[in-house]
Length: 370
Ligand SMILES: NC(=O)c1ccc[n+]([C@@H]2O[C@H](COP(=O)([O-])OP(=O)(O)OC[C@H]3O[C@@H](n4cnc5c(N)ncnc54)[C@H](O)[C@@H]3O)[C@@H](O)[C@H]2O)c1
Image 1 (cartoon, rainbow, N blue to C red):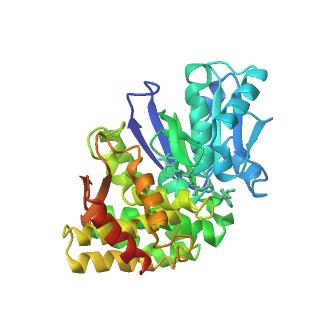
Image 2: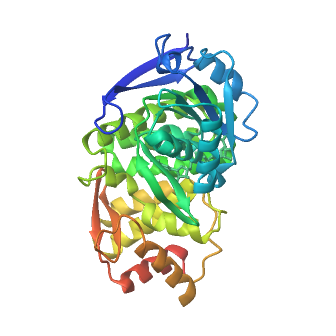
Image 3: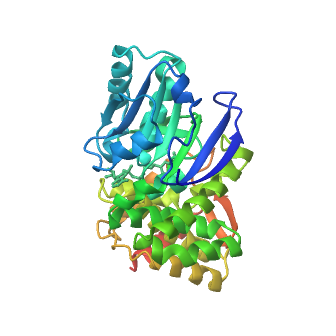
């Protein structure tokens, strides 16, 4: 039956049931015969177009019911995250007679769980869904916590909802087919966790980082278990991002989303976050919020990712003003010009608002080596 660890977290927002999470390798029917899937009227499995060859057999092992599966394929990556794709998916569900008793199982990277989770939240005012993240980034972060969204043009995650999955299935066998670049992108979010964790837990992640980058399954599983638990702990206390707890997970995302948008799709999400972490560390140093030693240790972790240079960015005025505009439009700014989560030390990160443009510029130039 493979190895299974179970965890559960009660949520208020979506369905009153307790969300069940399972994490392991080689799992068979981990949700059991009385699962949501067995009781649902209809089930739709959502993946991307042309998923790896191993996907269907892993899905059949995880979910033996229903035997004849209905699949819907979304376009690859960010192309899945648009209102037009939500409409197509909802039309498909409607044409196939899906009702409020039906269920969606989202099996893919963060783009699939974001897009399918969002469709689940609006179809017939909300139906149940199961999150089955298949990338490392999805298993440590995107597939957990019920934030679902699609993009508005190139602005990320502007249209979305909080809609908890009724179950979360973290199966390590999916990770075996991930290419190195996708692992590196996931490792960007992993470094974020390493900065947010207390030193002992952070050390575990830091030690695992080289193994993660080389695709060592045991290290990947270790990180999935530690990070998924941390995210579950945070969101169980601040499900809707209201008490500055969940917000910490946005460390690196303000600048990261700007870099992602400025790259016109060339920069994968996790790599953009890693560059955003570098920016946040340098900014924190400029503002004297972090000591030199901790900042250098953090920058050393980012350097382990061996990121490509952001050569699509210049140090001209036009380039910086695009960056400034993007960070100023960040949806986390509440009545403020800008709002960054700044690392103060390992395990300590705090928001800071209205940072003067001149300091943002210094950090921008330093980060790009101008
Ligand atoms: N909702 C949240 O809390 C949250 C958190 C972080 C990130 N996100 C979102 O997640 C998305 C990024 O997720 P991602 O990094 O998983 O990227 P992704 O979904 O774009 O997937 C990356 C690539 O991996 C491929 N892939 C997926 N599973 C695979 C497997 N098992 N083997 C081989 N290839 C596989 C996909 O086809 C794709 O080409 C972004 O849209 C980001 O905004 C959401």
